[in-house]
Image (cartoon, rainbow, N blue to C red):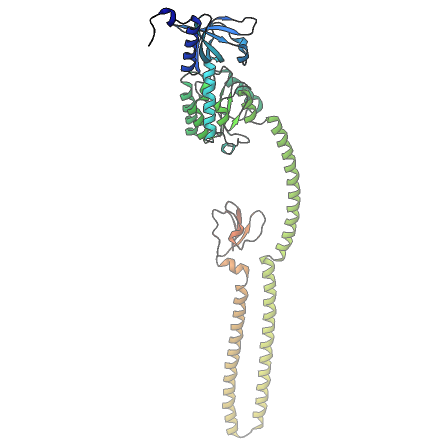
Length: 451
């Protein structure tokens, strides 16, 4: 029960302030306070004393020297800051104050923490992994640039591209690069580039600025759109010291927009030197190849002459003459033998004088004459038939006869080699077909290999 005696119930001011200090320090955890600096003072002790205010209130604050980190000396009256610390009471005066442990610019500090949190989140999802990165084309056919069409970045990029490799066309996909509308416009420009599919690499970026100015490139949806883009994306935001979430998720990070132009195309002077070297090498190789082909053509010409249809036909004609001569000789020999046999028979008949023998002999002579005529006719017919068979056999193996039946000798147009297998020729190659009369040059449209 409290006493009503003021002399026994009263406490000192120091005790009161100490109790209040204890209650405040135990009852309130450390916290961030945002406000504008005023009444800033820097005594020789190195401590900083100031007030934090907003539109309707203010609070005293102290930032002791041993707690100060970073460029504390740069703060001044009027700066809007975030102060982290604990609430306490200065017992000597009974004023409550904020004991600052950390202080940073208000806008940048919040954005920095949001930047770090998003970076950690996307890294955990694997959006920064190297195996997700796409390789840039060695020489792009067309370059897309997502940026403000009126900014300094586009002028720098176009100037570098014009100097290094002006032959590569450029398409600009305009988008705001600063402000609340910038993330949506960047995403829409990226979607347009993907939908139109007219470029094989994209540059997304802008010139330098503060963290707030570059914040559109730290937007989570922009980062995910870059990660999902099927085209290689180069992030070229700000200066070399500036880093954004877009830099980490893009396939390649360029230190500046000008650096992106340096990365994306080669130097045309280097390419021209290489092309000149290649042309000289091709000329030397081509000359050697022509010489080799000329020798091969001479060799194939000699082989062709030896195995041409005309030469083959001449050999077959010679063979036919030889067989015809041998056949005629055989026929003459057989006729001579038969003639001799007839003479012998006549001699025998002359020795027989009786009329009956003469008559029989005459009859026999007629029979023999008939047999001789039949035999001679059969012999001549058989011989003629054999000659016809030999002629047809000879004609069947003649290449000209084969051509006359609708066949053709098909050769490769470039090498002259005879084609016997459809697999030895490719679609698009020229062929030469020799017919019974004339030749045809054609192009292979399709190859149907046989079993």
